[in-house]
Image (cartoon, rainbow, N blue to C red; front, side, top):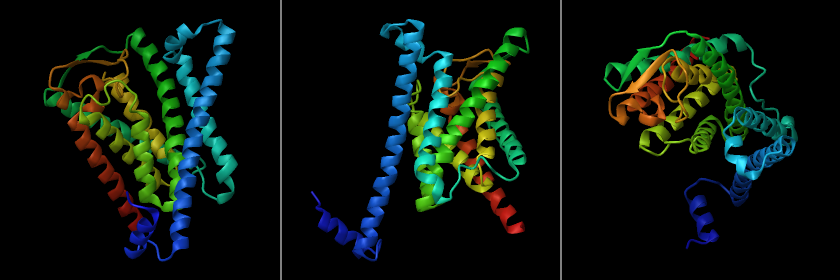
Length: 309
């Protein structure tokens, strides 16, 4: 096993650090960030336990009702609130005086949000249409009956909440924290990895390589959007319409979750590599290609805008 003396000798010889103080400072800063992220996740777990205990006491439920409670609608919204509270709490305690921001107070927030909404809908529409044209699925038109309209309203509320809380946590707090210390590339990489890992508990994530690959790429797309726009409103808009159109318009499962009453009902007719299988469009190779194109388009568009300004 390599001892610390040899490790330090290698990194200094390779020129990663010019002196031992710089190396020690780097290691301390990495340990600090890891500690903060772990503390944030522990805070989320503790707060969720407290919320569930209060709910069980007030409702008179027993531990045997835990599984049903976890999957209930109120628990999903409780999770949203807890993640945002943990992110804002950690920021207020440790980061506020350092000068970096979440990105919610953003100049031109409305135009950036509209760009994000259009981008998310366009990318998912292209993915869905290509999957359909290549024979991965068939669609049945359901339309806007009362059941679907009610579902559309419920889904809008749900995915607005999902987009806001996941972007505040992943792109606002995690990406902002790491960007402050190590710059944009490291921030994009780490926040995207964490985003994919947190979705790794969804059903079917590891049934094939594509769900986790697409979750990682979606994280990169959202993180790049955060960087190029200078705030959270573009990734929030993109995240919202990506999820919403996928589930409530085109009838796919969203990241392996249950299907809902949607405008189009989807029937899988092709292999999982094409259709996405039980994970939805995010499990398809087509979505991998489209998301890569989306990342490139966002980056290139920003570069052109930056050069013109």
